[in-house]
Length: 235
Length: 235
DNA sequence: TCGACGAATTGGTACGACCTCTACCGTCCG
DNA sequence: CGGACGGTAGAGGTCGTACCAATTCGTCGA
Image 1 (tube, chains in turn red, orange, yellow, cyan):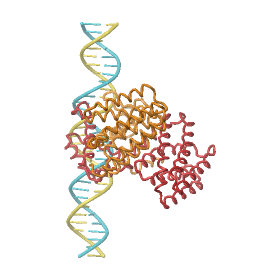
Image 2 (cartoon, chains in turn green, red, orange, brown; image 1 turned 120 degrees about the vertical axis):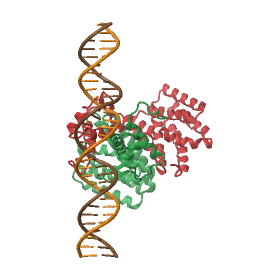
Image 3 (cartoon, protein in one colour; image 1 turned 60 degrees about the vertical axis):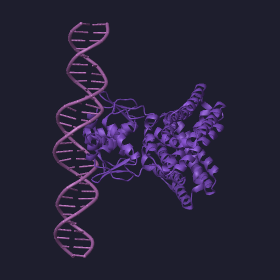
Image 4 (spheres, chains in turn yellow, cyan, orange, purple; image 1 turned 90 degrees about the vertical axis):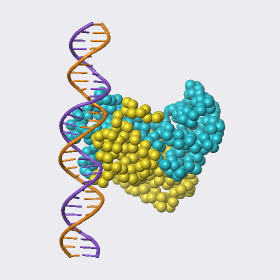
């Protein structure tokens, strides 16, 4: 994909690619400050307006960070920064895509649970216990969902793969938000969720990767079933 | 997550969120045409420059598509459109993150292969055969990598989950693969790769999900091993 | 009837002006 | 002498206008 020599492409797009390339080449290192918008525009031979569009795009992508009055900086380029847009995808998606999202989660979450079983420490287990009880005691749907989300976040963190964690974070946000709107308790899903979480927790305590994998698969399977029923009448 | 009433946030960011929300709410449907930049800016009470930045950001995200002279349209909002930025992550990432990316692929690819085993048709199998022979006959690294990429794409397509396919596509982005293969050739791994692909292919022919899963895991495992060795010494 | 021209529309680019926030530095007071 | 205050230059944020370029579509002429 050699850039076709400035052919039919917008100036802004070229600027985006240029900056991206310079970062990939190591010319702009993580955390480093970039030249000013004005200098950068002059350097690439385009107007500040266009340069700003390019910078904004890269900012949304999580590659750059603009600090008012201070300058433009390259982010740390960690998965969490770069995969933030993943959550947006989940939020905008509708219909069958929602189901597909859950199915991907059904693949990743068990793997994360298995990895976590081999690595989680006592502090992590304690956090899981705390989230579980907090979830039981929660009153508002939003509160309960928040602890549910945190429960999963602790596990993905313990899995030790930030990329995996960032993806699952994005995947979860949508599912859980939907649950808030729908009202969690209908159909008595809440107690079942507790037991599923408990099963995952116990497997982690026993450092049983396969047990954790299965328990997580069961849990997400239930979510998938829920998503399948909801399909189509949302968004 | 109620938008904090125009607190400390830039005008452009508000515009991005506003459009995003309207799409999520269904006010702007996939494929639909939006008002003109000028109207949109007036509607949200900001300048056209700022509105353009917002639109550009959403364009890069794969949510909008601007057609010169024609107008701005919402994309089909399919996973392939939205997850295009995922490839950027792979292009920019370095060090440990590269390893983490491969590890995620190691989770997803076997699952995709297993799903494909149950669904792939004769045409798909024929394409796999074609890519394998083309890869054998290829001369340049780029050519070979292209067929390798296509081989995997056929499988993920057959898996029937566009989200999964889009993620794996991003993980396998050209630049990323090019970097992998650059080092690969020196070690004469080509023949081994062929055999690994062949193992996957045979499992698919026999409609053996578990066989396909294992074969794919072995294949990606080799890539992971390579990434682990390369870790750290690449810009 | 149909094709070509041209005006209106719409995104793309460029300046230039001004505002707001940040960081830095010199001065003044304790 | 040292820390707090305040000013100032520099950077991003916003705005408005003007003009370019691609598309669209209606109109006019062959």
